[in-house]
Length: 187
Image (cartoon, rainbow, N blue to C red; front, side, top):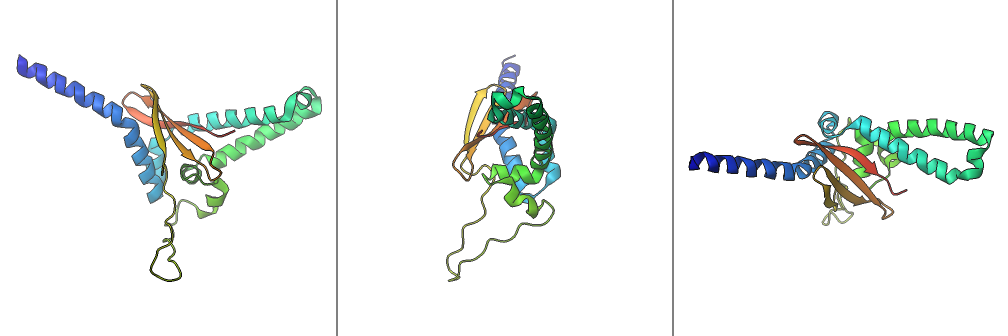
């Protein structure tokens, strides 16, 4: 009887450890997929529909707030906001791709990396002119990130963009798996 009790306790501890390490394993898998430029592996770690919906809501809200109440109340302003909302949707569709996510995770602007694509191999790091000291390597996804549990099923990784503003990557748990489901932009 004691043997079965110890086995049950050991399994419970292993399960709790796996669930606790889950977001860190997801961050590691995302980092690896971005560095290898493996879109299929990245898509297993990201809930793209939830991510797109969240970003569209954030950017549309920002657009409406910036427009102000005067523009919102006029008929022409409402038409303009509707058109701008469509543009926001297109921007989010372009941004929420393996390439765009990789750029954001490195703290870089998406448009600086869009031309690089996700199909070609990364360029080797350039050497310094004297040949002795190598130039700094390209930034890595989640490099210098601050990690934090917000609840038992919500975890954040915060990186600084190239302007020093925080970008939070939110992972949520679904059963035993964790996926990137939201990005809180510094709006």
